[in-house]
Length: 108
Image (cartoon, rainbow, N blue to C red; front, top):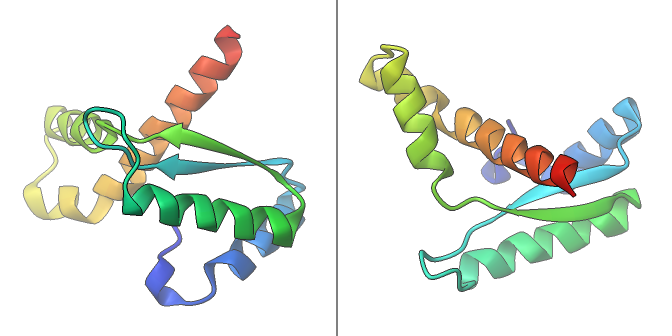
């Protein structure tokens, strides 16, 4: 998983898109419980625009509300210890978000 703090995320996403011939990039869109977009959503949209400009890929935004809760529940059910959960929760939440996006796409 990419970490914004570890360098040029857009360049790394471009490298991955080129390597795997990616056509669509799904970006998590953080929303409040009421569904409104705040400053974090604005940053996600800026990232999406930068990735689109660098890669030429279509950008899709996926609601990421409740993904961490679902991921935590799945990891607890799997019997994972707290430290292990902290290390993997973001990756599992991203997988939950992507699966939700794919499920919604297949229904339409």
